[in-house]
Image 1 (cartoon, rainbow, N blue to C red):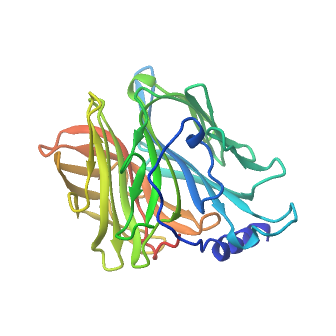
Image 2 (cartoon, rainbow, N blue to C red):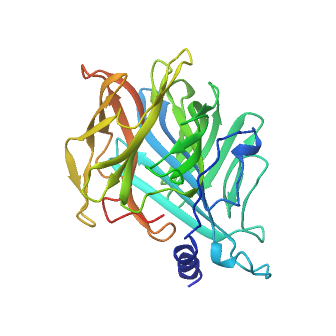
Length: 355
């Protein structure tokens, strides 16, 4: 009943007044922390982990996301029990050899030592789940049902400011934008747990990606969802590409970036990307059709994206209320050679996404 009440608050109170965001003047580490005056915010880490034990190698994808939502309807309430901020969290492991996705989720109102998000730096906690930045390194502890993430994530490159120095447009109107900072090529150490078995992570071959975004208005009214990918390339470069889709599947807006191994940054302008869907997987749970292979045309050339396994659909209706596809994927060049790994996210295929 409490979870249902929180979800009702989230759906009723997330209609935020929109305004055009001013240019970003980011200050770190403060802007790695929470921005509670904004309607929506998330810290999103995805990665590929390789575990080597003797002659045995296991490949995993992992995802952890902490969301913060400001509930507009309760801001004037004096009671400390008022749910002024809600925190959600998702965690998932893709077991490539086992061809299975494991997923768990949390939701709580901020306060009372149960859920909190620091404004000074990355320090987000939701019950026994946490993502905390200490020094330059992120520490993630997410003991979940049947699996667990116990990770240390160390930067190997500077932060990447998306869009115009951190202000990233998400639609044709100026208020359809977010502040957006990424940390590609994170070195991963620690271990994963899966059904009671512990898998130590090989740092040499494991990399992760962090996105931190906050916004007041994200999607245009005519938008149904998005396709997004963040890819760590083997040569040290990093690729971000996204498109916002209309209900008919056409592209409303697109963008992203490419940073070379030497640090040269190219910001993609609207119209410079083309997402062409390939092979489609149909969810047995809801009959949603997800393209699990894509051809991506960019100013840097043509690339192919292939899901590591087809069924990486997440049902998060007990927290954020959405069903979407998010999973470990491979990046190939125009000649079909493997050049990187990362995550592909596809929303709005099982129903129009509401934010």
